[in-house]
Amino acid sequence: MKPKVIVYKKVDKKVLELLAETCEIIYFENLDSETYPLFLNELEEAQGLLGSGLKVDKELLDQAPQLNIVCNISVGYDNLDLTALAERGIIATNTPDVLNDTVADTIMGLILSTARRIPELDQWVKTGQWESGLAEKWFGVDVHHKVLGIIGMGGIGSAVAKRAHFGFDMDIIYHNRSRNEEAEDKYGAVYCSMEDLLKKSDFVCLMTPLTPDTVNLIGKREFELMKESAIFINASRGKTVDEEALIEALQKGQIYGAGLDVFVQEPVEKNNPLLSMKNVVTLPHIGSATYETRFQMAMTAAANLVKGLQGETPPNLIK
Image (cartoon, rainbow, N blue to C red; front, top):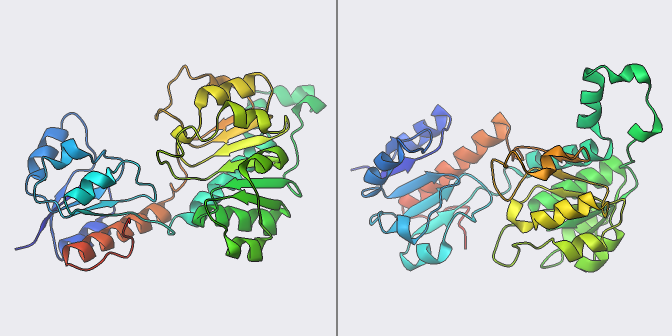
């Protein structure tokens, strides 16, 4: 008898075909007020769970007595209560590495868009204002040969460093829990303290995972340490930044601008002051959102699920 698994996110049919070879699939393209009760009913017999964003905590696990494995279609796993999973002997996986290049592309897009004011000037042209001429007040700032500070030199951080170093001749400095010797050797990255990074960087790129230790990692003090000409980039998780402190720093001119792919609340509230600031580029959490990468992420998660249910160690086990 095939083990029952729940897929609670829309995925390509090839992903479902891979799972169907060894599993009985219960498929929900999304979870809402109509489908969630049906999901909970199926959860009672499910041995595997595959998707992203669902809060998997003690309350949910109490309704899943036969669950053996939970597979996130994401590199982040802050939605998972790892302690509760471990207590029940349930393994968990994610999808690192496969999205590194795509997210790094997004980050470089945010850097360029914010520095050169691309979204703002796009609207300026489309609304017919070019007729008045391009005055200095519309100028942006250079990216090449500037100092890029990366907080979190993991796989994605390294991919950003590669692009910045080879593509834009940027000087790379970084802060991480441990030294990344490969990034130092390949991209000339220089390890430094958080304080030094904030003081020296022209661009501060936050790429740390969301953990209890990184909630509000960047706040009022950190923004005060940055240059007035600095641009802040966040494509990690919204809660790693004190959003009110970021808004205040931008309003006071403590930093030049910000490029954001994540927010404390998503979708972002319509009255959030960040949405009305011309020096802030906002994206709807699209870091890995290309057809190719999302497909590979889902296939990786499915492969993790199959391995786990077959009693083998999945390649992307969260430890």
